[in-house]
Image (cartoon, rainbow, N blue to C red; front, side, top):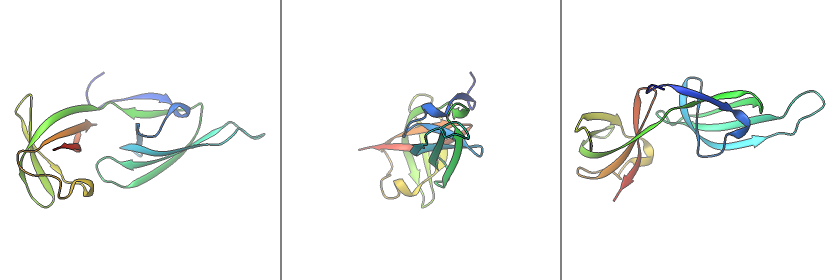
Length: 133
């Protein structure tokens, strides 16, 4: 499967902490609620997630037997080269490629030149996912 693609998995198997695609945006699942099947249909799954790149809350309701798209993720280590208020310039630790990504609210004040970070890539976009001390 090539980079930037997705796979389909049953919605009933989605757990908190996994990634799904809602409205074409890769999102991290923060809450999963399952309703019991009633006399008028099958069990439903309500998934609440936060967008990986925009930080916006999104939700979707699906029958538990239907499939949902899950992005194929790539994780890399990188080092902070420079920093502005809204972006951070990073260098890939393996390929030495230099690239910029937006600084999300979660990482404001935690990044500094020389720090090691984990970068997650999905659907052709990148974001910082973890900072090491």
